[in-house]
Amino acid sequence: MSSHHIVREKQEPALLVLGMDNFDDELLGQLLEWSPTLIATPVVAEKLISNGIKIDLIITDEMDEDLQSDVKQLSVNGQTAALSALNYLINKGYPAVNIVTDEFNINEYLPFTSKINLVIFYDRQKIYAITPGFSKWKPAHEIITLLSVPEGLQITGLEKISQNTYKTAADGFFTMQFEGQNILIAEQL
Image (cartoon, rainbow, N blue to C red; front, side, top):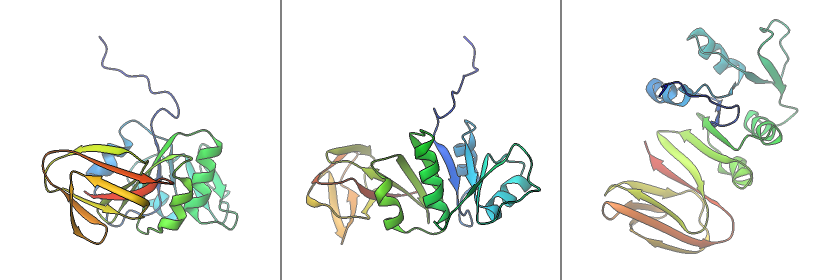
């Protein structure tokens, strides 16, 4: 049996890097392992390229005629880089994206939680959307923070620490049942 794997385009989540000032190089390496479509802003792209990392798409206000021909450019068209990239990925049929960012505005990402699978790495946190009835196994004493609070929230397997912050009571599954739209939660990295 061969150890080579064939990775089909869009099988792995795309990787959107908007900022990486406080991001671990080892984790970045893990996200790059399967050669995802890599999207970045011009400043971040410059850092990545200087480290020998190939960029597929640059999100920019100004088109650069001097870029390598294999690097595409996407105009932000008056939107933020995140909105432009997410709309692009959804229109191209990507099912998932990992986002590395130095700034996080929940209102920018919430509208996309039902359109694309988002995992956002921000401030040593892994942020992702969950649906009603979400369940996940975690070791004891792990911290879970609700970034958006839904109607009719019922939680099992977690102990409340403070407003919207919980810890796992024991090794095992925790479950969140609620009404309405997807919500965003955060785990500590």
